[in-house]
Length: 192
Image (cartoon, rainbow, N blue to C red; front, side):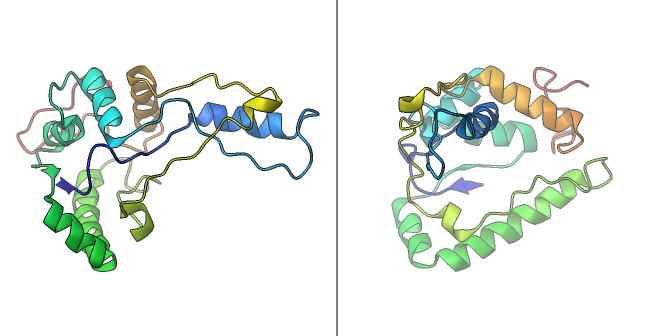
């Protein structure tokens, strides 16, 4: 699998628990009715910083750790495509998205076939807008000006592990699925 764009592409994040807390906070007395706020943690997350978290979580020592993680977990070759390919994808984003979805949906269906996850809500399907080279970056400080504080100011490897374990426990992600080489997923992030 090849990834478009570069590691510096901003992809801001917010923990789901902070989203839930912010919704309750938003209906409280400190927030004026009709107010609108962006929810974004303090991490200024990029594709590269997500890779660093995955390095910590899975012990992968490479600058392209998300690629190495996918290679390790699923036995697929990964990397970033060249600038020329990225320019072509930009020009034909609809077709590129269709191609990516056809390839990854087939692999996902094979991965979950015969598991309790066959009807999972998780999917590798992606819309063209999400595949574009536009940063997903917002300023989330305005809610803090009325008294809200983030309990999870930046993503951590421990929190990513917690989410993956929850997906496995909820039967939304396959537990201990073998890779192509026949080796089970590491017990560091799922029970065997």
